[in-house]
Image (cartoon, rainbow, N blue to C red):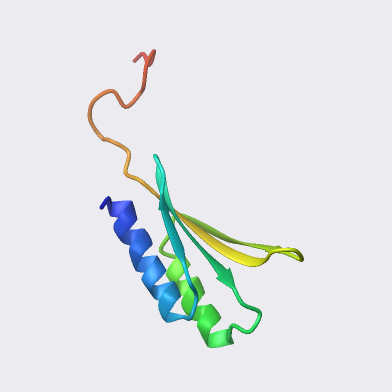
Length: 92
């Protein structure tokens, strides 16, 4: 598992401990964690949830009248420090 996957798994574990059911997905450049947030989440649980997602590179909350509230977090994968990091056509 990548370092971003380990961090995302730790975030997911903390969200689970707060009573949510997180989903973790690996992507090419990042790992995401998402969880539906019930209206009944207590203030203490909200603090736990926010502390957990603060470990991510980015996080947010999407709230709609149709789908409720979805918490999301993104953990970027490490960029290589050697080799052709500039990509094709990169000139010094």
